[in-house]
Image (cartoon, rainbow, N blue to C red; front, top):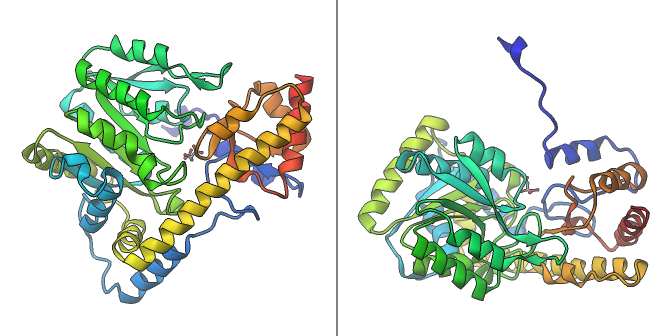
Length: 398
Ligand code: LMR
């Protein structure tokens, strides 16, 4: 049977990490996979996460099963972190179910759509996270793209985007990035979000919002403002939440799926369906990361420490944006890189062709995603000169 299997190409993002590990040059720089890094290139575990972890291990008396919907404390805490203290005025209307990471939450949400509306088409931004299409496509959906980003102008093509959404049939699923758009870093303004919420509500579209970077763009509140605005206007919505980046819990696979429905009764039905779906796929989500997040968010001292550390991470990333833009501008006089400083989150996408990406890697040992996406958090005081010189060199020769 397995003789029929064919070899798969490298994952566009994870393949870079593998290639980077194989490179033995000390000056190599990894701007590939979206993980936060400090100025030494390390991906730290936040202090509050470390402390919560130690406390949990000290008191945990059993590792008996929880349930397919996971840890209720985690579900309630993260729901509130995302929706705000007043749940955007929709308290009780949401089913919140723990999932194995943001990707697990996306898949769970897709399964819920399939149960309720099997023929739906899913619309993703052009461009979008490299795994959105394989992940949602393998859940059985037809995937289409809506216009989002102008690479020439380094800005959102808002008129084209809204005209496109306006023309979609009722029931279409629209994947939106709540903040820190991946791969462009270019977010909608709040005014634009209000217009999108209006279209979605009027046209009867289902927003499926991906929230993987809350707190890493501007701050915890502003990064969730889009979701809260949508929740005030649309009857139904899905939100896939990742705790990988903002809690530094990447490998612990910690996420939440929120299904906002039109009543508490429907929310209970949706939660039951989600529990059943989880049971049929992986039975139950892993506990450790969710237990940590629950503890960090429910203990005031840990929560304060985490919030401060997260805020410092966002400040650092936004500072690196300025550092890189200055480095590029000083090497490429006449070119404007100020757009890098206006974007948010870990990513921006440089105007690099695939062959420039290859030259960057082969000749300069700077690893970026195949579409020119760079992880800004991988830039540091120590490597910015090398990175800017390398990028300027490949752009000049391209
Ligand atoms: C990324 O976009 O680099 C991250 O979300 C990690 C991943 O799983 O692709």
